[in-house]
Image 1 (spheres, helix red, strand yellow):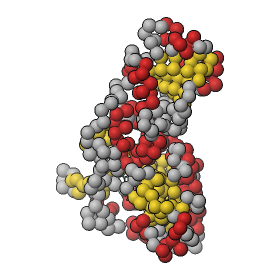
Image 2 (spheres, rainbow, N blue to C red):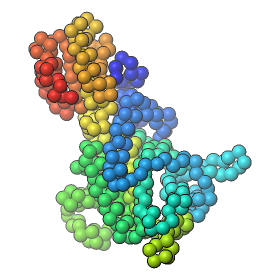
Image 3 (cartoon, rainbow, N blue to C red):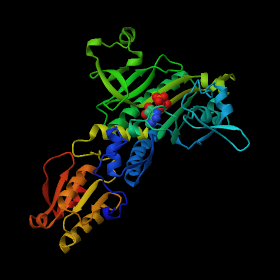
Length: 414
Ligand SMILES: Nc1ncnc2c1ncn2[C@@H]1O[C@H](COP(=O)(O)OP(=O)(O)O)[C@@H](O)[C@H]1O
Ligand SMILES: [Mg+2]
């Protein structure tokens, strides 16, 4: 991408109506635009990050045998009445509307009910199981507060995976493999060290649900982490009893603020029984399918990464999710043919999908500050001086020192 063509511009002013660091940085950098409180547009740079995060998640979901689909945003009321979750007193984040003929409909805040109902049409016998399905969906939730930028939105992207298993044993095996897959995802996203499997409330069938909590001051939760054992307890279920039950020692637990990046549940057979998803087992008997539900906050993850990995100069994108891998900065290219030629050559070698070429007629200092602010992993400066020193100046965003690399060696960076 040529920076001169990018319609979003980097801004110095901090947006007045944003208190969260993630929204401030992302708006200034031209990754997102605020439509209203808790509702953000993904601009060209932002959507590239989101797509990269999705791709990592997609690879890990496919490796588990997950099949991708896309449910609808408009949902039927009757479905949610069957499980008693239509009432605003039971679920307080519903957005609802009416069709022209006055039929009430809901906007999807979750998809367990519709997905389960749909699968009645495809699952009949034990031979049809297991089924693992997932999607990336815009969830709509009428959240009371939306002050955490993209970490708590009223419209946000979630990955939700659902597992339909024949037996509790099959379910348990899959559930544990999702935990492993989530850990791999967090590692690839660069926040593996600080993300903990956390025991929390909300288990519909089991005593606990499992959350994945990432330590950050921008988080809205408080958890007690055991760094050595790599697990945590959410304060909502934190008691001496629970600590003992989990074989943890109070003295090894550290109280920290964290953000819930993922949440996984076992529903047992209850949900499928309520909705009528039964299968005929080997013994000829009808039994409810065992359901597991596995959420991951895609937009929230982008916010968490900005909060955690940024420094005083700006954002720092991990290699796998950066909107572009390299920022090629041409200095004084308008005046210098050689600089122009070589920067174009490097840009072509990387390809417009991998590199951002700063071809604007802007002061060097400003270009550097903006490059730091955008936070692409690799910075390559082409200038008269670098050429006279025998090449181009290369620097990683995470390092202080740059070094001159001869032109012939650029290929190695690719
Ligand atoms: N309002 C929101 N904005 C952004 N991400 C959210 C929001 N609500 C939930 N998420 C993300 O989706 C994941 C699954 O959501 P879920 O557990 O159903 O939500 P909650 O914990 O709010 O009931 C959460 O772990 C979180 O990462
Ligand atoms: Mg949750």
